[in-house]
Picture 1 (tube, rainbow, N blue to C red):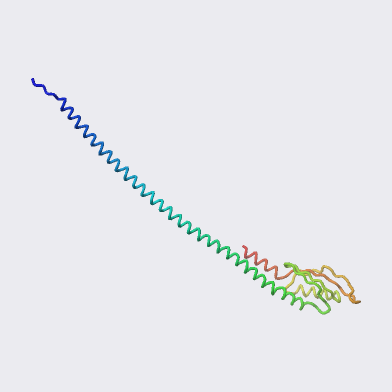
Picture 2: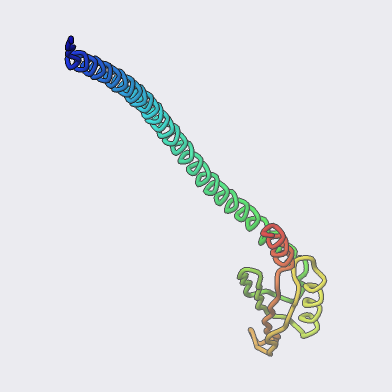
Length: 192
């Protein structure tokens, strides 16, 4: 009988399967390394693109901040110019307003009635003067009430005084400016 030693064939077969398994394991490891490396590269490209986007967004934000700063500066300049124009308008109004009122007051003043004091504060006016008679004071008050410049005419004091040996009536009158009331209504309409 012939004896065949099968051990070396089995050992060779085992060796062959071990080599095949090592080759397959090497291929799998190489494929995994390629996949991981490609994923790493894709993520690096995405991170780089995101950093570029952030940088460009920050540049744009800084540009917009400078534009906003310029707009705010323009708004403050506009506000300052508006205030100055309002002051100029008020000065022009006050320049012509009192002069017109004093001219109409001069026209309304009867003969033998003299004004000694005229004080204007906002919309309140106080007039002091001397008249020959009380009737002249009443006539003057009616003329003031009928004028377009004054309203709410009130006689505060009427007393007798003597000046250079002549008996005269000293008086104080308060009233409001007619033009001040419509102006306040216009201002409230503008604010709404």
